[in-house]
Length: 291
Length: 126
Image 1 (cartoon, rainbow over the protein chains, first blue to last red):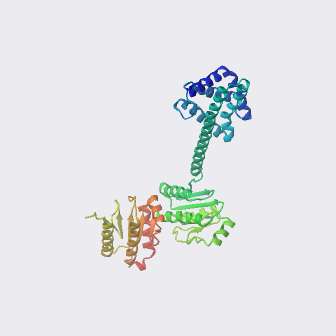
Image 2: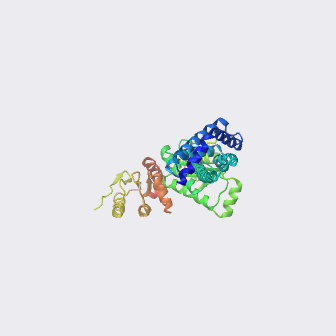
Image 3: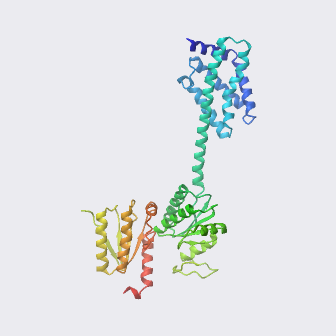
């Protein structure tokens, strides 16, 4: 059987001069990685890969997706994942596999029979398949990394802080989209219940731009807080943002807006009936509508 | 036959505590009951406690607004208390902002709001 003899030939080739080939491979790969991974590390990874590749070939198959190659695939996935985390490019990852071809070339060039060329072509096809598999695994782990990071970012960037008894603050940093607004809304409303607060301040100092959609989201949040019996103040409106809001014709209605967080806090305290000794203007009725 | 929602009287205030998810029939009954009780007792305030309500639709949302309007006609203020975050978000997404309805976080705060409003307008409250 042709397939059988080809793999036998390959196994013989790879095991006879195995030591030379493996160290040539390691040298090739570690030079292409430019010393960002230690040679010892590369050597360990590739020796393992070489051994398992040989073992898979001994089972007589040349299909990269066959059962016999499951260990090779597992090792390659692991290698791709580490490379992806360390910030290597897909090329630098795939080259680990393709370098083996380059190492084999001179060996075959010396005394080549037609059988050897056939074996080399078969191995080349196998290595191509494995290389593609590496790139796929690399992309997959990159995507996992990105989605995990964006989730973390969503959680990190929306804290709800207690500013005073009965007053909570939500400092917003970064662009607001629908998904983020939902998180902000839920967190804020839950915090209103947890702390029993009747005043909430949404600070948009860190929001780079306000368009109609962002304004819509803000309004929804304020209305939801009102439904639960809490009052919202929007603070941190920078001059350019104020101009944009007016130019877009967005109407914040009777929602209190303040330029700074300090003003908003003073306003909220006044409404919740806390008097500041320095000003002595606050009254306990809380019926005033602010400045 | 749907369950009737009990309407309790505390001084000048009527307390309606909704404990289950209401069907349409129960909502209509509640409106009838409440209107009758406001007239009979001469109450000046109505507190609707929806702490236990987890699911709302547009019908229940409108019911709250309708009850508030009826009560206002009969010279009683309405305060809705204890709305859950999920309920508030649903109502906002449905486009119901309950314009004429006062709201408060808890029953206690709702009663404070009512007492303040009733005592701040004594001449008109006869």
